[in-house]
Image (cartoon, rainbow, N blue to C red; front, side, top):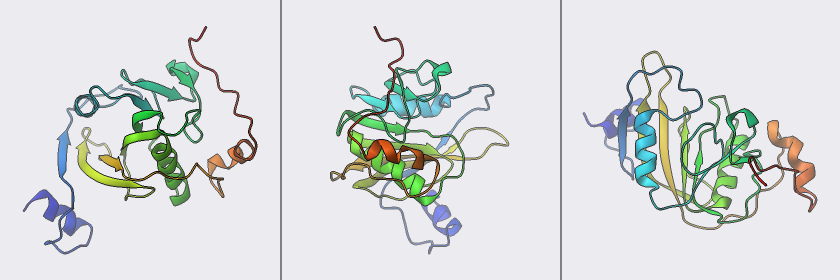
Length: 199
């Protein structure tokens, strides 16, 4: 049985239905104590696929390539800021990578993150999480992997989406943790975000 057929059976679809884009498996060795970094196999794949492109990590953590935005100053990001409302204009980077904390996200929170990423990205949005997401906001899936990150760990997904159309600017939040940002979205003043290591 192929991976596509296995996925189809697991999701309740007919075994003859196949994904319209390639789906593979990334096998990562057991590792502990990585703390806010990508597993080695995932990092290698991302670096190969983003070579020569400008990259923004909206949840920067300890990534060692691209521009890192993170709300936690302890990880010493390039920009201290919030992924819900990043201080970047439309099409500021070729690729935007989303690797949010592995918490439950409601539909509106997930939609807001994807819309924000689609706004900032010129070419591609990458999603790395425990939740498999569908295409939305002018994003078309082009490739995906199921990721085994270690024994006794939740599996992850690595999904690539191509930007196919321009989305409107991020809008107000109706519920979820990002609702506190509505007052900044409603006025021209920006959040007082600091650049780490700036002059």
